[in-house]
Length: 259
Image 1: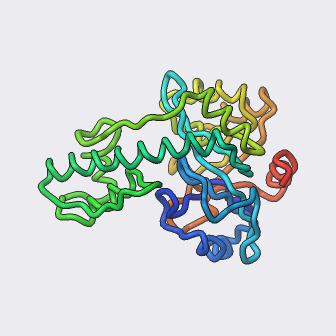
Image 2: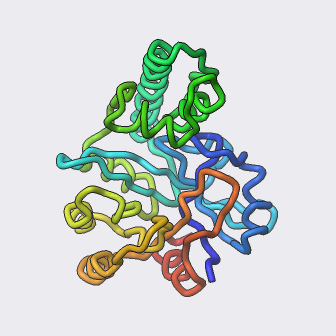
């Protein structure tokens, strides 16, 4: 039974839940612990590493994309106490995110002959652009927008600047109680991704990949590197608890991160 969903996004990045709606969504899912892990951004309304909102424990986290040299990885930091260095880096990343979204919108509008309604503000990302495409006169739904326009190989894709792995890891390690690798089996080369766990604290073992996966490589990495097990649904919508930690796993996480 999932009691802790440690990978949830809000409207602070590209999710659809407001922070004050998280507790109701958690109660509906039977989840008692939620980690808010918005992309490249701290939540301004979570000033402490852990909060308690309407009977739900809310862990302030972050999902940070980094360049590992052989591809991009996503790191999850939990129980954030912001440092000046982390805040400065995130400010620069958000500026880049806004300019990237603006350029993608320009490319889509020119290509498709449509007008997109996108707010260019911190936290904006490709899902915002995809939803705007789906709501426009372009012949694509959200998935079609990624498949045909703004996916990694799409004609309207624009890359963005990300810190290298060591810089991102060190920034998070200085500010967070625990740093782990997100969804290790989503990458093109899971073995290479898992090799980076040697210098991390944790790895996301429980994750809804939407398909059958062989988790044995993740289990071996946990054993080899003494990693803490994390897990979550990577919720961008309103449904929580599709993946996460059971009670015993959450106790181990809580003890390690010292919540």
